[in-house]
Image 1 (cartoon, one colour):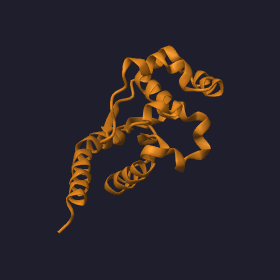
Image 2: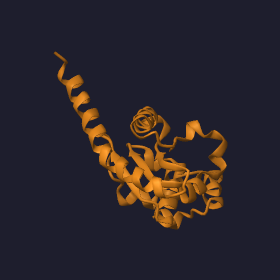
Image 3: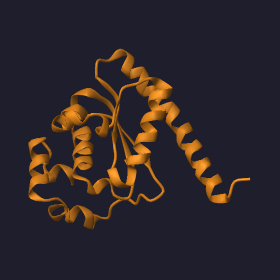
Image 4: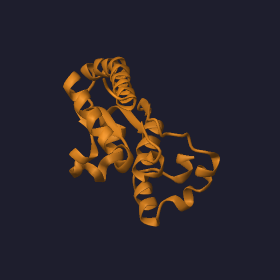
Length: 162
């Protein structure tokens, strides 16, 4: 018999996998008739969601043989990452961990998806809490000038994120 914590984890993983079947099937149907390169773009915080992102990518690819954008697999495209979301992605899947919204790349990817009409499928994790108003009030101090410049170059302004 599994300890309760392992059984709970197994149940959560099965529920997550089952919850992915319908959205991935719908996205796959859209992919067949379209021309975009990536069925799914995985938006995640490296530290708090990197392992989950890799597992998700492996599961989705195995089930649907789809092109999944995972930035660690596509390092040559990081300079155009926002263009990939805007022009080459059918669905942005956001792995909502406690730190995902603090990563400027994630904020940019989500903002570009919203502004471009790319559907977003949020996958909340156990530790995710929606941000308070204070989070948005402190955006000016969250990222350094170089990060803000990257966002701006990608067409993302702080006012878009709010």
